[in-house]
Length: 112
Image (cartoon, rainbow, N blue to C red; front, side):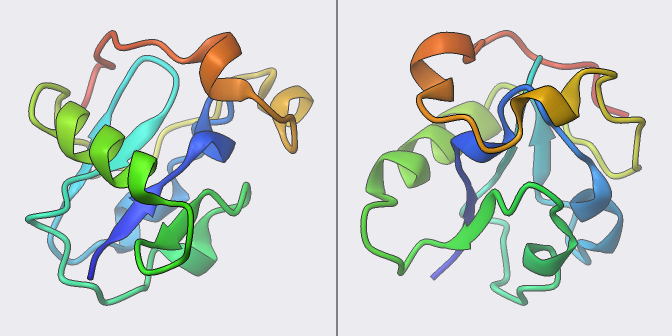
């Protein structure tokens, strides 16, 4: 089992989770984060840190797509280990549905 980041992170991209990760398995895209499934040790400390509730165990039903998205982009996006400021408009995007289709960007973020 691993944890995955879902579309609740898109355009919110809070980074509270990265500082608590003991194995630095978060990777940064332009407008969301992902978890590398082969690096995650399933400790779960990141899940309660996410203000957008975007981190879930991959054992929850319906997260197969997100496991694939996390695995794919963790290979090419830069690693992030330090908390950054959230986007200034992050609160406006919290709780929106369909964010992957509307806003997802495959572009990498800056990383550390």
